[in-house]
Length: 388
Image (cartoon, rainbow, N blue to C red; front, side, top):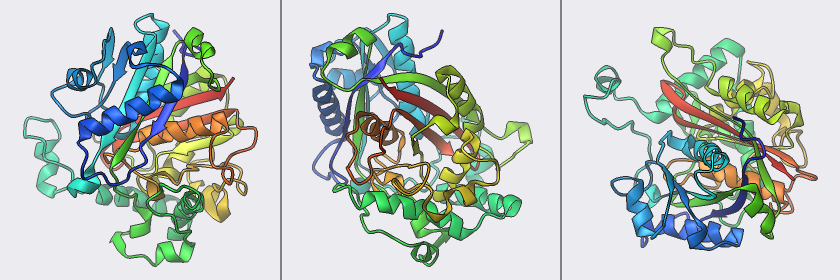
């Protein structure tokens, strides 16, 4: 069963705060839910499906459902890390197509900035998990895992630090117009490569920010979407997968986007060259380059060249990306960036992005996310949306 045209994103809301020491995580979830419901022009009682992941506090999905006093007939607490929310939108579309719910709420929220948790240290989650006994003795750190991928990409394809830096430069050009962005100063390639080295070859400015906040979206069946006074953003294609150590045949040169991209494009009936705007997960600059290649926007190994000279900057390049500033400059709530990728894509399709970064005639957008780390195992999800 295809989800193409079976559901629409009718509400989207991003929390304005980047540090919220006086708010609980549950309160942040409730505030973004309220914002998205109001953006859609609906009421809380219209929600009959709820989707959340590991960032939601409590024992399980029932904790937040109880906190927000939701009356539900479909729930999903699939956790795929940072790409969970793209997975949730696809799952919500599937549930709506199957008649399991009519209006689904998807929330993300967290406060790592207030809690002093950068998300850099890979947590020891217990010896009973399959990977822990083999990896925890080596104390893996998230930035090291991505640095390993970046170094491999440089070795295989000649990618340079200057090319990585162009991803950050593009994000900063967009963030200057976002009043809520954590880092609003436009930076140069030289400033990125001269910033302190964190894990060779990744510099400080190659790394995403750490922020509180969150976001939410509302997914509804077509009849309800058309009854609302909001631009119609139709879900047309999706793909999800995981990538690990491949039974020992480790290949750091590609990500799960190699599989999720073709799945989404096939379902949507479009190709990469049709996409007007792309929200690409940007935990690190190398993450963007890898995913652009694997999604088919350029050939494998040509990602560094593709992002250079402002090719990702709205109004300058041919593929505007992360026009809110992305995780590199805007925010990365709960150390999970997938939700904000959806929200900015919805803004672009509605024509509601900042005038300085709005893509003209933006009628087809892609959002892509990862969860986990490219250096050992991760989830991957792609979502294609169309302005109707």
